[in-house]
Length: 502
Image 1 (cartoon, one colour):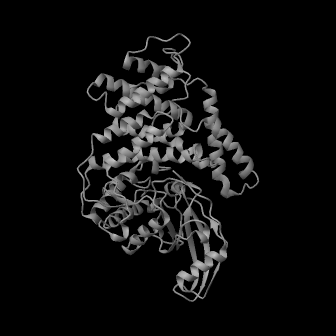
Image 2 (cartoon, helix red, strand yellow; image 1 turned 60 degrees about the horizontal axis):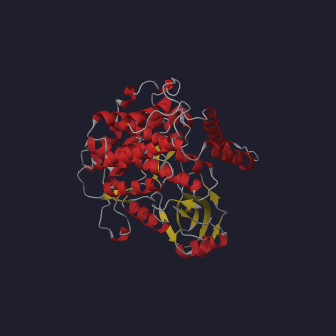
Image 3 (tube, helix red, strand yellow; image 1 turned 135 degrees about the vertical axis):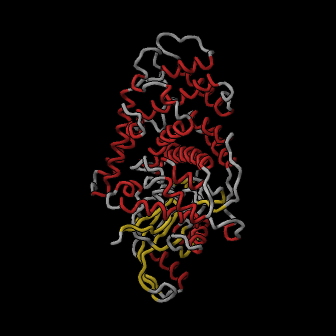
């Protein structure tokens, strides 16, 4: 994780930089406007009028720089500019990159300038807008073709020598290193990472991977003829890797927004996207290879979501979007269970009865809950409402109001379930290890429960249950219960969308 200062904007310094790079006699620049989108980057819109030089005339530009806090695994802005320039030169649909600046005297941090592209990149709007609906299948096919063109950029490339090569083993090592530092146990992720480790496919020659190629990171422009792809956005995670990595990421359920049933980015059937990719690339996709990368995508998205909430938990960012996004990691847990243990949901019984049967006493433990806590989210939501939303209340702030109400709903549900209904899970842990005698009638000690949960995560990491189906079945049942219990508090709507309604 990395923290940087907010940019300081002096239009005169920006104008001087643009003039020097374009050869203009003079450049007039508007006051920069912060654009929506970008969780770890900031995009500032500026209007510039160039007198002479290579860009004579009026132009709408975007100045892209770092947010106050970010993720250390991403490229810096000068590197991202180089990748975007290579993509533009290869004929890929991106905003034209113009100039990069590493001089801190201009705005206080590195940035680059590109042309501004019209359209929308809002994932929920794209997947839910009825006016876009007739065009989404064609957009999915176009994206398949676009991805194949991205993959024509291959090493060695002296201009992209800084790009990392990330293979599955490196992904796995990075996931585990992060989980070792995380304050809560994530046994579903440990189990899924173990599966990845034992199912690594044969490698293919490396290609340029966007590594965030998904709905929400491309822009659509509505025209009289319908909708067109205007640009592929956000190249800060690019690197060399397996050509199926971006396919698994695009199909990851976390990026389907309003249409979880449409496996290709929430906009079309998977086959539509993949057929177009195959036709353009000349390469047939292997379903099991794609499945591997889709499982990896869900683990990676879970870790990224947790890293985002770390910006609030560790770095002190006072931003509700940043704080709440870590809760989405449990959505990935559910998808991983559905991908890797599709019969497990039937075996564990109806979730409505868990914690209500009286078979096992409740366990008071915070260890099964996601972070940040509901109380912290409620306090942050109230702060945001009082300081930022109430004084304004124009329509463009409605999304923030919805986030506030979401945070408050999570806190309310947790307050109603002050004692986590983990008795069934504690019983299964006892069945698994047979190391704890029946606890007192008042409930199992929270410390012992957390020790067992920590032991489960460690055992899943090393595949301790791989050779014993009966113990493996108990372990998977625990993972299902943990995930569904957390989602019942954190996001019951997501459970319902996946067929786990009350």
